[in-house]
Length: 196
Image (cartoon, rainbow, N blue to C red; front, side, top):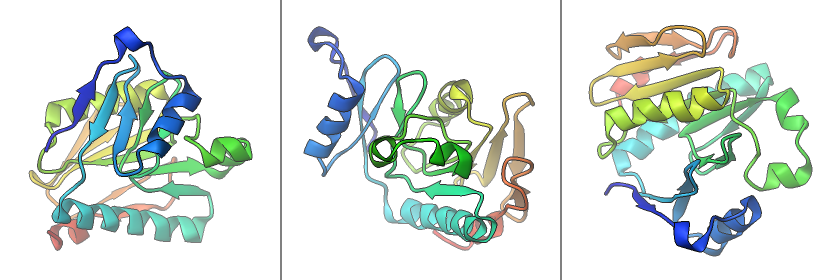
């Protein structure tokens, strides 16, 4: 199943609080919002994608428990981006100083910031070109410092940084590092190859 996009132009757009309440009123559905105010109904993932996503979150969480440099979020967490889009990456990380600068209410609702780091995992129904556009327009365009698009189907990892050319890692027989954004974090792609 692919995502469904709804245009609400003739009704006006939701305020941030209205969109948050709309999502809470419909807990069985997962929504995102585009910068243009369109509501996107996101499909649930299949078992293989869910397994891979859990692996990505686990590796990130283990590193963060040791480093204590920030907060890790799963694919159910929506972030209110500077563009007014509300997006939910598969994995997100926010530095502790930026997280602590938010009020309790901001931390409880959709945090009004772009994560420092995100991972998007290509599922069996995702269009690669659309995901690549999301990486540059939504994540880098809103201030993300490092973004990875993991494509298990092709065994490729696309590494996006704001001031550098796109880097493509081919083959899941290696690791990729988090550099200055995530000091000493290494994602073991070999673990993804063993799943699914």
